[in-house]
Image (tube, rainbow, N blue to C red; front, side, top):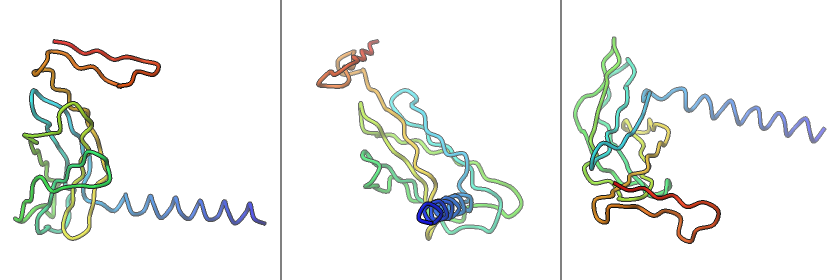
Length: 139
């Protein structure tokens, strides 16, 4: 009986989780490093117009700061809208986490991109202290 309840609970949890993510209008969120910037792209699916959106960044995937706040009308009723934003000052040589919020509470999933800046020294040494693997990037 306990096993049956646990399976039922897990199934219910998975359905709630999938349902909450499938209702977001923010689709195809991606981020990529390009030169000294990070390009963030996403799609707002067709539907009611929205009253602004925010792009948020974090360095720990838990505590996010708003890096862009668009207060205008967004989204279209009959077609999806592509949005591209350039993060001009990502955290150097670390993982940057991003998510998008359509006001008041439509959050995208969290994505990440490792931003490497080799300009200062010409190389990047990762994982200090070294345990099993050493990664060395250079120009």
